Length: 365
Image (cartoon, rainbow, N blue to C red):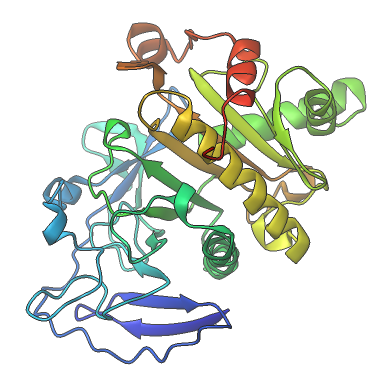
C-alpha cells in the first residue's frame, strides 16, 4: 500500500492510499480559497449517567444532501474543485471540515458548564476523519470487489495506528453510515473514523461486563459468547478466520456481529490472511443486506476495537453491522422505551433473521 500525505487549502491533512500494483504520484494542489477551520467543540460530563457528551454546534452549517453533481467527495474536475484535489483516486482520507472533535480545538474552556458545577467541561479534543472508499459516486461498499475492500481494511489499520499514537486519545472508532434513512448527508460511498479522548459508553460497559464475569466465574465472557454463537442457530456465514452471526439478544431488526476466530484487540493486529478472510465474509453479508428486501437496507457498520490503553488484554475485536429497517418500507424508530429509557424492544426474532439472511442469494443467477 502506498500512502501520500498532502495538505488542503485550509491546512487540513489529506492522505491518498493506492495499492502497490497501481502506484500513482499525488501532487495536485488544492486551489480553493477556504477560510480557516474553526472548531468550537466542548465535552460536557453528564454526572447522572457518568457519560461525556460532545457539544458541537458549529456542525449545523455542514453540507447537507447536495445534488449528485455537487458532491464534495467526488474527484475534482475542471471548474469544480472538491475536497479531493486529484482527478481520480483509490482510497482517500482527510480531516473533516466540520469535526465533532479536533486536535486544534480551543483548549481554554471553563471548568464547568454555566450554572452546573457537576457538569465538568473539557475541550472537544480528538480527531475526525472522512474515508472515501472509491472515486465512483454511484458505487457502494458491497460492490467494491475484494481488492478495493482489502485496501480499505489496510487503511483502517493504518489510521487506527496513527490516531492511537496521538497523545490524549483513548479510543479509535472506524464506522460507516450507509443510506439516507440512517441519516447520511453525503451519498458518496464513504465512512468515518473518530478518535475519542475517553472510552465511549458501549466500550466501558462491555469491559465492565467482561471483568465482572471473570471475577465472579473465573472465565472469559468474550470467549464463551463467541464459542457458543459459532456453533449455534444464528450463524449466517463463516470461513476459517471469521464468523458472522445474529446475536441472541439483538437490539436492531437486522443485526450481525463479525468475530475473528483468533482473539485480537484491533484491526492492525489482523494478519494478511485474516484481512483477506474478513473481506470475503464482509462482502458476503453486505450482499445479503442489499438483497434481503425489495431495496438495499440502510446500515451502520461499527468496528468495536480495544481501547488504546487500558483493557486491551480483555478485548476481542468485532464488527457490528445493523439496520433500522424492520420490513419493506418500515423503519424501527427509537421511540419512548429506546430513546427515553435505553430499553430496547426488538421487532424481529433473531433466529428468524438468521435464517432469512442465510436464504438470501448473494450472487445473481
